[in-house]
View 1 (cartoon, rainbow, N blue to C red):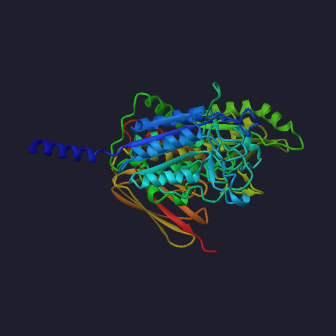
View 2 (tube, rainbow, N blue to C red):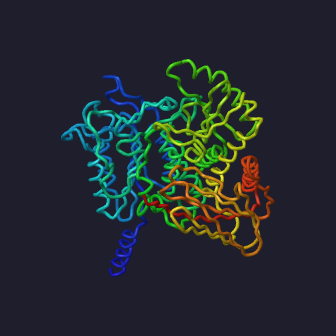
Amino acid sequence: MRKWISLAVVGLSALSMASPKRIALVVGVNGYSFDKAKPVFNKLRSASNDIGWLRLLLGQLSFDVKQISETNATREKIMGALKELAGKATDGDQVLFYFTGRGSIDSKGAGGKNLQPTLVPFDGAADTSDNDLKMSDLEAWADSIKKKNATPVILLDASYSTGVTGSRENRFYQNSPKCQPRKGSPRADLWKGPGLCLSATDTTGNAFEWRVDFASDKWRSPFTENFVAQALLQLRKATPRYSDLMRVIHLAWRRDPTYMPKTRPVPSMEALQGDYDAPIFGLGESDPPPEPAPEVKPVIREIERVQRQFRVTIEADDDVANPGRRAALLKKYTERVAALLKTSFAEVVIVPEGGALPDRRIYIDEEQRQFMARVIGDEVTRAEGAGTQNGAILARQFKAKTPEELFKQGGFPAYLERMWLTEKLWSFMDLNRPTGSLRLRAKATMESEDVVRLLVQGDGPGSMLLLDQDEADGVANLVWPNERMGEMSFEGNWSKRLGILPESPTGITRNRAIVIRGVELPAVEKGAGFDKSAAALLRAVWDALNAKGTVWDWSEAKYEHKRTP
């Protein structure tokens, strides 16, 4: 008898120490019950693709997933599934709720101001929030999860107020946000509950959809697409953190804030600390990367293929006084500029207007019988004559009599290549494991309001580049070697001290030193030849890193610049 009692106790003990699990409820709605009753603000197209995309990641991480979509996604069924999910949660579990569809605000709120955000289910109504999932419903659910010592994670791809700027750029993709507009204004805080809440935008910003395949008219939501793509890529290298994924998403919009106006992901960049700086979905710091499932491998290969592309959109400004001018400019120049780009860069892919965020947007125009090209999404606050004016971003401008002459001069394509390769090298470090351990160290110290001292040290021979990325605008730049030259090759134990002038008056800047071994790099030139020679240098580094057998390593230092008034 005592043996049986002993065995029973052991069995109960083993059950009580079961490994934490990952469970999820994913909800998606494109069409709504009120769509036919009255005109809708916008027609959604991405929900089913969003869910399928997210489930690739959840499957990779062994989530047990329940899905509710379209006509089944009623308030009653969603709330019932949330209750069921909470009932399954135990100590240490990761419990995810995901929603893609329309958001709105609580129409029953007093005074029409400071209203709580809501999610609109299939049986929601256009003008009333009676059937909506209010944020307080989700906050109470998250609290019930937290009381079981499990971690609630809320992932929302919706927007809660119209927030449309009316700018021309809106029409390049689904030109209105994923919300159901109602009278009143939302509260400032999207989330007041426990756990982690990650959202495509805040309560007054925009969440959009874009086309990922023009041939089949396939759509996804940018937030879901980027979150999943970055997670899958980073899982090949190490355990990604929520902060890693959200930082990439934030910086994409900061680099080109006119593409999808008022896209403000949550949490903010400043809030990416504490629990948001933890590994995603409870992964361990030292967990080995999971082997990609058969259905995930081709997806990762496709993401990698797109990552290596130089994606460019060719656009033209509207002219209110002459509505036909934009169409005439595009007809006259688009094919010519596209052909010149493809001749200059083997990696160029021309992205139609309305596609996923391109690496660069080139605006074409004519001015005083000259062809003009403006580059959106790079040194918009740094180039001479650039900045913001009347809320519009002015970008680096190039002029010549014809597009052919502009490309022949060399400055324009060299500039494009330098900026593009700098950002590709920055991303390469995030997504790939170094092939050598070169004991590289970088340290940044604020010497004064206007000068940062950077110390980089390494062991053994190699050639070094220094890049930086200002989180104020998301632009990566080649810092060293620069137009004032600089030695790139080192032998033995070496150190390099650099003085850097911060570009932004406040905020965080990251510096990355990358060292490669056994590769002879071209020198950079001063003055007018800098862009072309820097592009050649970066191309040599890019080709070396993508070749088998190259030994490389990198180190990062960051500093926060706070200039006093």
